[in-house]
Image (tube, rainbow, N blue to C red; front, side, top):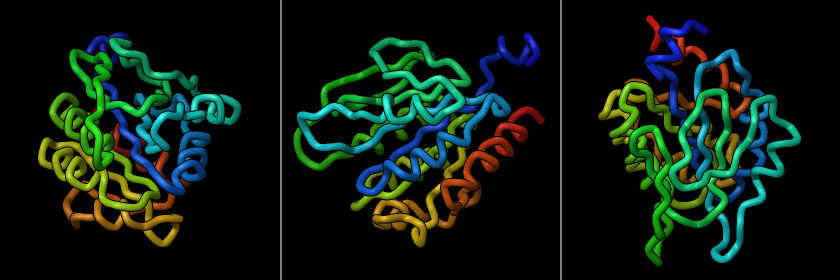
Length: 196
């Protein structure tokens, strides 16, 4: 990695959204991520109100990259997997995480994060939608593409719950429909294109 490349902070910021049935594809995807790709990975996963996610612990034992719990105002660093362990809204500002209270009602935490990712990271943004019921993530994916980023969606045929993947498919340019095990190679290709 060159000093110039590091100085530019020209790494991909990859948002990963999942809900019901999402733990296994998250594990599959994240276990295959390596330092071959200059990127940061941020997981927003629906889980029951009043509980904390255990994904950080689960992933730490199987991932080659470090896995960290997101804290408000932490700086985003490449070669790291970040997990939002609390049921709140997450955004990005000045390359730092910003956590805010989530309103009661329909859970739109993935859309909230993808929308922020789209505006801040623009062409460096990659939104990934994995298994889940409902449509959270669909609107955020649209915004990511509109701002020059890319979208990767779990093939609905491989998802335990196909609602979120199906609703996120807009048949746009820079949209890829893949199984979780094929996603790391696609992310690496997107990063290579960013450097050209």
